[in-house]
Amino acid sequence: MNSILIRNAAVVVTMDGRRREIAGGAIMVADNVIVSVGSDAEVAAWIGAAPAQRTPRRVIDAGGCVVLPGLVNCHHHLYQTLTRTIGTGQGRGLFDWLKLLYPVWAGLDPEAVYVSAKLALCELLLSGATTVADHLYLYPNGARIGDEIAAARELGVRFHPTRGSMSLGQSKGGLPPDSVVENEEDILRDCLDAIAEFHDPRPHSMLRIGLAPCSPFSVTADLMKESARLARSHPKVGLHTHLAETRDEHRFCMEKFGMSPLAYAESLGWLGDDVSFAHMVHPSAAEIGTLARTRSGVCHCPSSNMILASGIAPIREMRDQGVKVGLGVDGSASNDGNHMLGEARQAALLQRVGWPGFESRADRMPVREALELATLGGASVLQRDDIGSIETGKAADFVAFRIDDIEHAGALGDPVAALLTCSPTRAWLSVINGRIVVEGGALPGVDLAQLVARHNSISQNLMRKAGLA
Image (cartoon, one colour):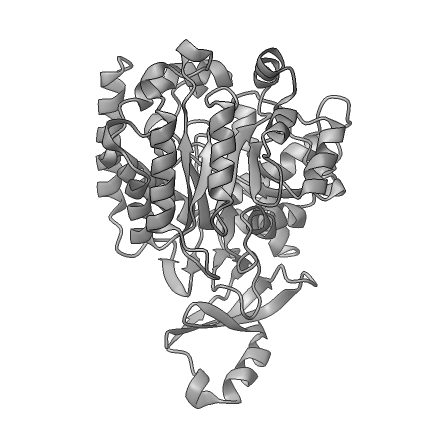
């Protein structure tokens, strides 16, 4: 049996039903499950009650650390690390940004998908993410969802890749060029193959597939309906899409369908506990009620929404009405980073700023609520009840951040709040499914310098082929 004892933590933030924060806390892991949580003395007593069976093989002193449940990234485009700052540095909005980058992304191939996924996942792991949902919606030149799955498996991250798709090219009234869209029969066949080959619906699963037609302006209504039918014929296969991200999207839907983006999704059967929408920046008050009533999830992506000037999502109102909300870093070319702890900080700050018609208020999003979005919130959006908190029986996913460093000097009065009010830092320790994947702020066995060099070479080739370098 693999067993690890984490002891002497400054604080263990459990996110359990009582939201306990345990000073001098400890966590005992057996194989891939948390088996004891409490103070050092409480966990030591639990071990002492049956030392022959419970003595840990590895003991880690987490003195000077705050330990959190592993952070859950609900929405990402890992491949976009290859095109950071392209468009965002120029100040482009979503539609213009996409038009610039579609021809670059048309050059992706299996190696590009694999290497970009590995680099982005490394960056996420070092930021405290332990579960990552990705939305890969382009498959040119033989690229497959298995290319990014291979990277995730090598690193040991808990992965929710979605088989995305685009089928509505410019010739049929969509936004993307015809060169990057696929035939719908081929899409659905590949979706079924991905579920059959990779999907694991069991508790503590390390890999679950979702289906994710890209957006109202890049797929047809038929593909949305068929994707929902296919997903719902398999247990725990979620549905995901971009929705209500910008005013341009709202105008597109009103002109093409005669209804708002969410009303359009509802007309296609796209509401429910198995559905999550990335962004949801522009819902009406009534639509927030619809999201809450149907238990549909929202993946809030504050940094992306700011850098593309999409707007400020009304997360406070969503939370107050009971909408399931998690956080997403979003594409690395519409952020341009992969830092989950930093994203939780942005979520808190952006809600405090407010939005048109609402005054700024510092109490609109407390730090601990932002951390809840990044843990329990994301778990709920991904239909997971086995992650998101540090409790006995839950998957052994947790991260530790040092608070005895220069960034947190003078902030020991509330070390939990300091994780977000001070500059976000690198995770010191990360345990996923009972396995140590980050230790001492590093990724054991990963040559980051070599990975970055390989990644940048692929990026430069993509730019050159697209005439942007």
